[in-house]
Length: 371
Image (cartoon, rainbow, N blue to C red; front, side, top):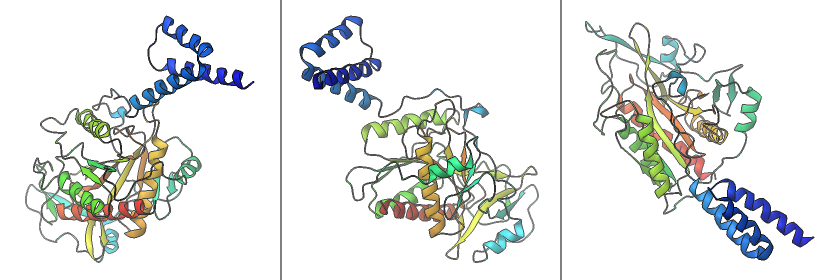
């Protein structure tokens, strides 16, 4: 019986091995003949084939997706009315931080307002502890809640010589207002190739906090959206893939962006929170959900999103908007710790966004320290 069991095991493993690579019929026949002649050697060879196959699949194959197609999963959605407080309430909610200055709006300019986004409640919102996840998928809230209760799918090694986290930017040139005011220039595109004022500056704040806490973090500042905005995600996919191939120790990949909240009349709205008496740009994590098998690891990413958001909101109440859990892609198939985070919006100031970068990094470091 042990011999028979061993032969059955070899046959099963052999079938699996030949399902991944491309083998000819004579090669397959020779393999199964070797099971009878030298089962131990055949077992060892099979293990090597399977190990090689798993190594080759460590970084998933690139997926051809049209970024210009609104149905392809590269577009976000705005906050709901339930999440957004009226302007007067937003100012009182951020009472420790100064509101936008009063005064006349120059001719030809558009109003710039502050808003504070609350955590949602009721159907479609799932508690992550101190915060909520906005479930915009077809999955029942109960199923989402059950998944969010699971442990993290990865273990970040503290004080490691090997990189654990990669921070990058698909839309690196996204930027902010450079001064506090109650108006904005409609012609201001809120984009710049200057790494000291665009998303790279915010990512640098996050990376500094993580590295200071013993979380080995790399920060890529490639301009994926310059000179052309089109194809940005294909370019960033290649960048992330190259890092993962060079540093297989990376567990977490964070694509750091900023939002753009604008009303039909051209008014730009900046999401803010009072954190420690200073004005911070509110942040929003976006976690994609699977569409036709394009994100097989989306539930693992969701666990990470809910745990990180809960830690941020516990440490810095009011910092986060609800996590957006929706049918989005954003290259989140590449690891089980891949997320996109919006650091404020184009109406926030750079200093507000950089301050949030420090807070977000501190919360993430605290989460990893818990193990």
